[in-house]
Length: 116
Length: 114
Image (tube, rainbow over all chains, first blue to last red; front, side, top):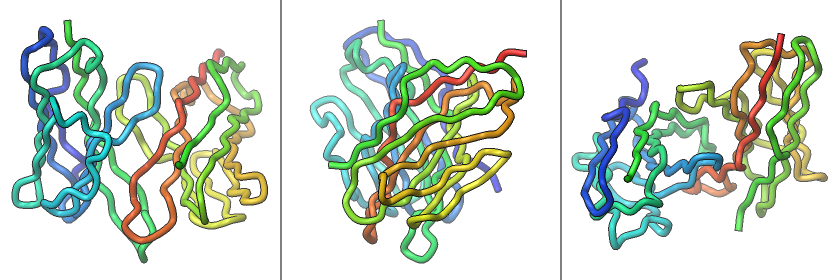
């Protein structure tokens, strides 16, 4: 099966500019996640979608970050305006559930954002 | 809240050495536990998992046993290869339907030298 697709792979922007990332999950995976991975740390959840509804966005900095998942498939994550501390890898993942237990995630390759 | 603690890295081993990467967790109930691997320049890949106490996950010569009594999920491999050089992340998913978020440890970088 095809993996989780993300684009762009790399992005360099100046602070206060805006940026958007795109994700296409594995076909049939209802749950989609965006994670932020700062260098030297583990990924941290930003937002979780179930189909096209938001399940959890408690760790999303809503003053500058937004995300949507139209039609329950593709998703976009936007940052506006960007700050230096937003420099990180943004990972998209989708998951399958087996018998009410998480069977596993599939991660995309990520978008490496550098804010200068 | 939920948390995962991994041993500090980096870890440098010679080829064919024995590997242990310690992982302990804090969570209520019986979370599912995972090890993910991130090779240089690549995304996260699921290495192995365990969903209940005393389960042993295994893959590619790596093993980890879910120990409820010690809240641990240590990763082991009997003989590492240069190709195992990567960053390894321990993670948990809380128990309960609908709670499918992953909480990760900080990662342990492994370097295997010939």
